[in-house]
Length: 434
Image (cartoon, rainbow, N blue to C red; front, side, top):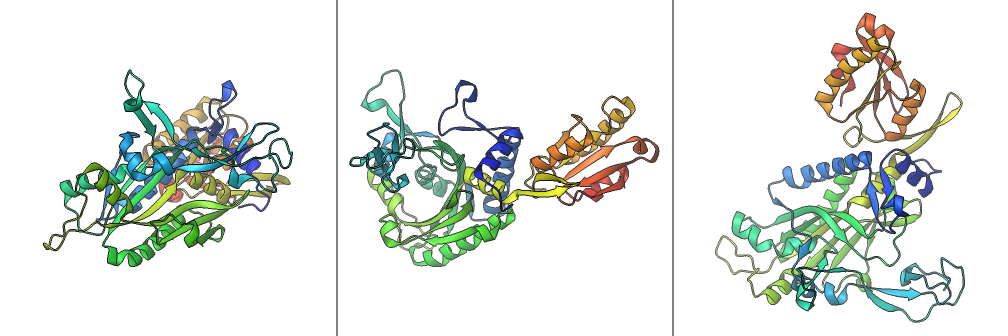
């Protein structure tokens, strides 16, 4: 990460290069909503793929799930969200702006700057409500889920009945969640619509501490796999007074963003709170029956919860770099090849020379078939193309020039070093090492 990187730097690059746009931008935007552009969508998908491979496909004790966003309102009553999912809110008596109470410092309004303009705080439920069916009444009330976890808990019995897993085992899912944030802020860090990668890991109550420590290691392994700078990651043991009443241990994994140290992801020990509540409210048995015939019991739960948007932001901050090339400042994203939304860019030196374009297209087709995430780039001079691909984070640029026609080779430019070398087209896949 460049020491000079600011949130404005990240926001500007994200829009300029098609990573993230303001939601509903042509209509003036909608606060707390963001649209992922073509490159941001691919970056997010690459993160998800690594997470899914690491925590689902490469393990024998994990089951994937994709639960519905809309669920029976009784679920949110049983989980405590309907009555307890609240933030204290303050309203400025001068400009009438509203804020979360923990975002106010020195009793000063962040909008109008007036001091001592806040009265008593009041609770604000952050769930988005909606209605299902043609008649709007109490029976039609539903909510957009504020987390993906409850969809896992209400499917615990289904997975156990279908697959008869041994403890410990987990259920994992990736999906959208919605929170009616009072004051969304800091780009995609805190928004009203976001995406989570969550696991509920069911364990024997006697073994939760050992399994918890394994998940601490798993989280660090994942952050390392995607290239998050470990010197910017910090573990915060949440104090007893700040933890949920049912939790005996929670760790917040924080990241040093340009606006300060804030939560990147969380690891919580939830005990048996959720399964017991749903068992009581639904009347369905949610106990685990050991295969050795011993007494059934309610498993305890360890929950690693990853916010994709915050991870994307942390990656952009980590990868953002700058240097000087030929007397000019250069900005680039130092993303690994596994994460980079574009792995290779292919260019004819001149786009109006058909023989170069034809040769470049042949190379492009070979690379596209092999890697998929390959971009054709013939816009502007070669220097501008290199700068554009640097900001995208493309590891390699392949240029076809007039020597290519004679020697059947290309110029390969490395993003990080900017060094170039000639490579035979027949050896190109081996040389790129993607």
